[in-house]
Image (tube, rainbow, N blue to C red; front, side, top):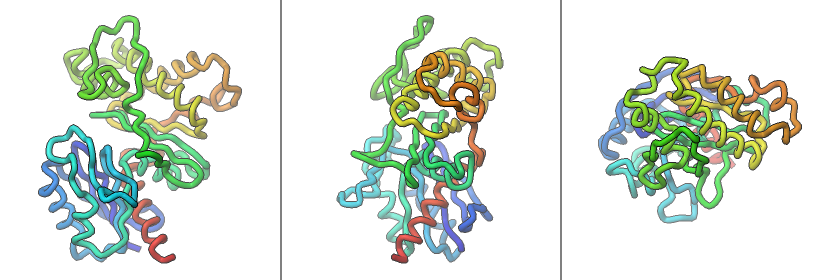
Length: 294
């Protein structure tokens, strides 16, 4: 099969073609500009390639309600030009194939459950921690939606006692994204995170905020695996710090072996690496194709 995949990030688009086994055979990437010009590049890439379906994992917030007149739209994103844009409708006007549609992080969670670190499990939660923070939830065989979709990057946090940074989320100030995403690290310390040493105090503070969120996720959703991706998590020294924060926060309350003695295998990097989002979008396209046959 030839399935198209679009990982639509706030910074860049990655488009690819893969098969039913999750193998990506071709890809292209380009910066995320204004919506019309960005989608034109995606349309040009897929044109003439004979794709049987296309899956899209998009930055959000997005409308996932198939009964809504705005289904397939990007909604309240602060990214200039994209709020209110009919993403899915633009593609539907060019390609008469099934289209899968979800958030980029839900797609990544789906990809990891199908082919990556959570393969064979019934549930997982995927965090992307980079320019922003997004959370995708996979449970009972599918990505989870509800009133809209998970927006775990904007949960409220308890402030670190040594932190005087006011936060930088344009909506909430000191939510998780406002305190722990890449721009927050840069604004707090005056340099990009990639320029800080591995033993800089920034990472213990970063782990403090991420660890809070993961603790809440464990208590609320009880996932079988938590996967941490995104540019910030390329700082591998964060993983043991975050795991220690989670164990400290839980304080033995949740009596589950993966949390007590196997946490190194419970809070993990993506099994698909930087391909998690693209493979997840491929999985969305594959599922859309299968549903179209019913």
